[in-house]
Structure formats: C-alpha cells, structure tokens
Image 1 (tube, helix red, strand yellow):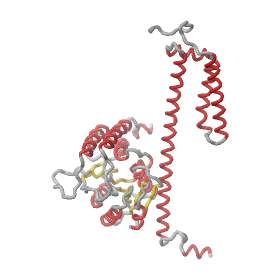
Image 2 (spheres, each protein chain N blue to C red):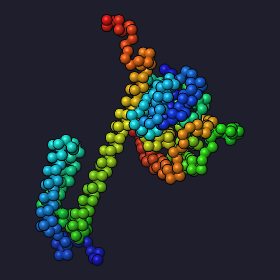
Image 3 (cartoon, chains in turn orange, red):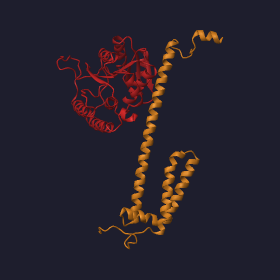
Length: 149
Length: 242
C-alpha cells in the first residue's frame, strides 16, 4: 500500500465505469419520480421531501459528471472512486437519520403537550360537571335557562 | 389563590384513595388534582369516586410529563403554591404540609422532601428503607448533582416537592419527560431559583411494586449521568437573556 496521496490523473486510480454511471442515473431519476408520486398521493409531506430531492440530484450529478466524484475522492485521499461514493452515501444516510431523530423529538414534545392540554381540559370539564350536580346533560344553571326561555 | 396538591398516578388503584384521604386530612384547604398517566386500571374512577379532579393523560407518557401536567394546571388555574407527592402511599401528607410551609413563608422557590432524615431521629417500624440498587443510584446521583449545582442534595429522586409560581412557570415550559426528578433540580438551580431540601419521613410502599430491577437501575443511572452532563451545557437564565 502506498502512503503517497492519490493525485489527479494517477494511473492507478479506479474510475467509475460507464455502466455504473448509467445505472446510477436511472436509479436517481426513478427515485425522484417515486418521491414525486408519494407527494402526489399524500404519502409524504413536501417539507420532508426536500432532503430526498437533494439526495437524488446529488446522485444524478455524480453520474453525469464523474469528474466531480473523482475530485471529491482526491480530496478525501481515496484512490478508488467507488469507495469515495460509498463513503459519501454513508455520510448522507447518517445525516438523514439524525434529521429524523430531530423531527421525532420535536413531534414527541408536541404529542406530550397535546396530551397534557387534553388532560387539563378533561379536569376542567369534570369541575364544571361537579358544579352542575354531576350531570353533563345540564351544563347551564337554572338562571341561564330562564334567560333563554 | 390557594394551594394545589397534585398526585401523579400510574396504575395505582390500590392506594390512590388512601393517599387522597391522607392529603384531605392534613391539607384541608388545598385543592387536589390526580394526574392519571394513562393508567389501564381503575385509578381514574377511584380518584373521581373519592371526589377529586382527575387530569387523565390519554396514554402513558412517563412521570416527567405527568408532573409537568400538574405544574401546567397549577399555573393556568392561578394557584400561588403547589405540591406533589407519589400515589403509592410512600409520602405522608403531613410531611407535604411542612414543605408547603417553607414555600408559603417564601424561604425557598422549590422545596424537596428528603427521605434521608436527620440521623438523630429514631427510625420507626414502617419507615422507608432503601434497597441496595437504590442506594448505589442515590450515591451516584447525589455526587453528580452536587458537582453540577454546587449545592448539597441528599435525595435527588424524591417525588415529594412543593413549589411557587416561579417554579410552575419554569417547569411547565421546560421539564424533561425522561428524567424528571434530577434534571429539574439542576435546571432550577441553574435558573437561579432557591432550592431547599427538607428532611421528611417516608413510608414503605403501600401497594404496587418498584419498577427498578438491577439492569434497569444500571441503565437508569447511566441515563441520569448523561442527562446531567448535557444539562450542564444548557444556557443559564442570565446567559439566555443576553
């Protein structure tokens, strides 16, 4: 194993084959179409789809301009462009998973507050019922009834 | 307006009526609210039958969320002071009254009832005796919380507390659902509130069983230390206002 950093134009550098590139482009386009379809069917909200479109476009860019990926591979000091690709995808997935944890935490807090609000409401309803003699069917006191009648 | 005593309860049908009766006897002027944390037994029905209001959470959310519900209710309904105690009968209401007296006299914002009483007071037959795993956890939390707050606490996980409106305001907004007892102490101290510990008498559990198995205890302790560590990096009130 060489300890020298991989330079651009290094003859030993492993490039992406055109077969890989075509496959990646097809998968990227199909993926973005799937996302579009899911939004159309209300299976996915727009605000959570942005990150997936970014991922799809990134994949397409990588397939269309292999020089881009090789540049990144050089910056990472990786000789094999495929390895660089895997590393990038892995990092992206890590980022996505973290993003979901953040969303989940926020929603968990919202659910908790919603449950608390409902619990407090129930206690207040009970207090009103108790004041009206233990019946929910008579929420008005007699004075109010007379006014209405 | 007056005082609210709230009792977080999760599947405590065996003891809830006795606890309510005890609070009524020793704190006749206080309003009582049972916060039912999604019980699957008859906790809500028994509490209602005992004639107290019940704030029933639609599903189990954990002690932190249940306590926060109580603080939120007290804040919204305009109570001057509030206190809470466990629903399993470990906390005598007569001791809660002593905590409330401290808050009412404005000697502290938040008062914690500590089961580790004065050593001079002789133990009684039904007094609380901690289990082995509980003792380890207590020592670890005591050490880290004291380190974090630079204030001495003996009973960090005590669920018997009394508080004023400043605490209600803080806890109704910021209260960790996962690690209620310890993080809330750290939070209160960091926000510049006066937190005081009062030695109290606690009893053995009247009903139900403790959820702490050894493995769970270990996880509980680990989680607590992580939570405290993270809590140290939260902004203090003075810093947050800048």
